[in-house]
Image (tube, one colour):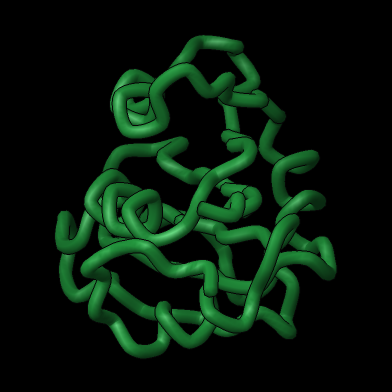
Length: 140
């Protein structure tokens, strides 16, 4: 079993429970074109209730509590300037490198057949998208 948390959202739990090592989870900000720039077979969960509710970091915190994360990919602006939210991503993923990609290469990653879940958030900060790869649960 991949789950290890108090995460309660049934559709998210179903998607995570059906995934495994190497599965990918996209947490998308309020500007992300998830209907056209993500694998169409991946289930969508709409947590974008209203602007600012729920944020990408709140969703990330819940996901991290439920499954092991092997790697994280983020979208960067063409200017190369690092968005402030990356510091929060690092805080929630201690010791993990954020693999940076331009906008269109990031979209290409999100079209991969391993994408098992898309979570749309009400995050208003730009470039607040993160693609997580699920890791391994080792035997106790």
